[in-house]
Image (tube, rainbow, N blue to C red; front, side, top):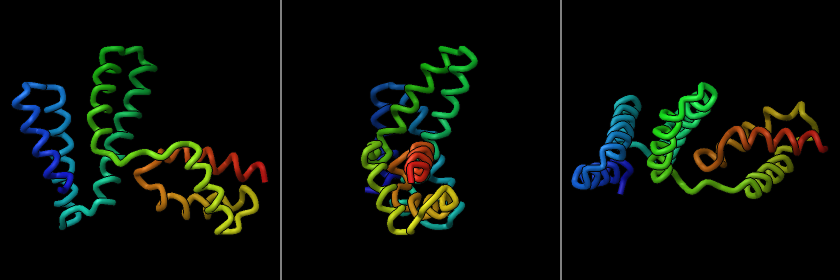
Length: 149
């Protein structure tokens, strides 16, 4: 079942349950998927769906940080609820230990020796973990491992 089909099914369930918060988020996600399909001109592949959901989650995560800085607890709570709904449609995220392992393997593959090779390592890692790991975590892990060499 495609992500769009899942979103349609969940939208109907939210309507029946009169869950306005979930319904609102699912509608936004569905619109986002449909807009992306129009943009690329074909049904989205699972990788494209995962990347889109990761993008949606990251937008909310960035907003959450801004709301916390501004002391807007009402918006923080609403954004956290949205993030929980979006997270249901994302692939399982890999742990920090798994990120560390992928980083070390990739560094060996590309024969990276110092921070000068940072771009080469990131370019090789990101396709492997796309949608499964936060780019910021990957970035920090790569820097830490390269600096210890």
